[in-house]
Structures are given as C-alpha cells and as structure tokens.
Length: 239
Ligand code: G3P
Ligand code: CA
View 1 (cartoon, rainbow, N blue to C red):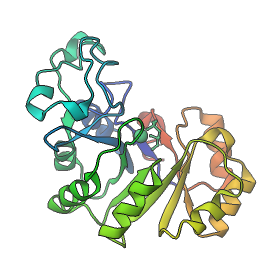
View 2 (tube, helix red, strand yellow; view 1 turned 60 degrees about the horizontal axis):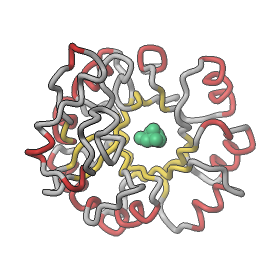
View 3 (cartoon, rainbow, N blue to C red; view 1 turned 90 degrees about the horizontal axis):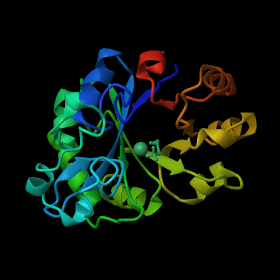
View 4 (tube, rainbow, N blue to C red; view 1 turned 90 degrees about the vertical axis):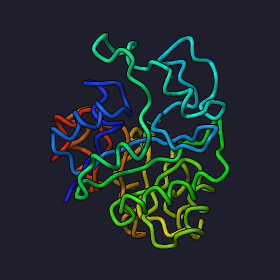
C-alpha cells in the first residue's frame, strides 16, 4: 500500500502548517499529514517550518524560541498568503492533533537547524500521549540526536530518519545508528532503484520528499517507495 502525506497541510490552499491548511488537506482525505514543530520561549509546541516568522511577516524578526505563546498570538502570519487569512496566527501542535482523525497517520518533524530546542522531545511525547497519538505517528528529524532522545524516552515509537544529502549506503548508516528506525525520508532527487532496494532490504520504509510531479511520483512508486510527501494532497492525498 502506498501512503502519501499532505506536506505542511494543503499549502497551496491556505498558509502552510496552519489550522486552515490542515482543515483543507483533510477535505482531500489524505492517508497521512506532515507538519513541523518548533518550541516557544514558554515551551509551547507550535507548528512552523522556519525558526523565525519573517517569511510570513517581515516585521517579525525574533526567533520563535525568543517569543512566548502569548506574543506569538499577536503576530499575523496569514496576510502574506492572502487577505482572507489576515490576522491568522501560528497554530499549536495540540490544535492540529485535536482535528486530525485517528486513522490519518501524522508525521511530526522536529525542527533543528539553526535552533536546537533542549527538552522538545519530552514535550512532544507528552503532547502526543495527551491526544492518544503515540500509536499513529511517525516522528522524524534531520537531527538524528533528537531521534535518539525520543528513543531513550520511548523505545517503540516509529522514527523517520530525514536525509537532505546523499550518503554512501544510507541504509548502513541507519543500521549503524543503532536506532529503531522505521523509515528513511530522503530528498527525492537522488532516490533511485538501488537506493529503495537497499533501504527496503535492510527493513526500512522509504518516504521521499517533496514530490509534486505525477511522472516522478509514478517512477518512485515503481521503485517501491512506501509513499511520498507532497504539496498537492488533492492529487496524491488518498492514492
Ligand atoms: O518531512 C519531509 C520534509 O518536510 C522535510 O523537509 O524542509 O520541507 O521540512 P522540509
Ligand atoms: Ca517538514
């Protein structure tokens, strides 16, 4: 079975990683949804790809890490997308958890560069437990130490190893990490048959990001990937 993730919600229909983006994505009945988490100064988990909000609001120059949740609620991140979303604020992870049907697999990505958030792993697990999400989640990160920290706290969760760059024998790196990696999440540009076979023979799932082209999608499915992350849940969502 192929399982595709709506990447940051439905980011062409609403501001990425916001509650409206996830609501729009759910209309397309995706099997999975992906989001990014960062942490505020007062340790609220918020859903955002960037460590600062400047891309969405030019006046906002501070790192999320330097702002409280109350301060973040004063920052408009919707106007830059469209007038319809004027005054929209960042969304908390728990707001997404509360609207996501349990059968939709969530991929929660712990963001790292350029900010490392001490303690984010425990906060995340507590939040997932509160919303009864531990059984239907993949926690991924480019920061493999964060994955290790998750594993120390909860050894049976599904872990996704994100890799932006091509490595020599990626599957051996994943095996040598000693972590119970569930799936490898590579940048799709270097994924080929050898890569997919190597990972699958070693027992790992393969979920490349970010795939928006139908021909490339079919090629990856032919190689045997388990699914992809796509900005177009209306096309790839429930395939
Ligand atoms: O999790 C897949 C993908 O989201 C990783 O890259 O930069 O979009 O978070 P990025
Ligand atoms: Ca992401």
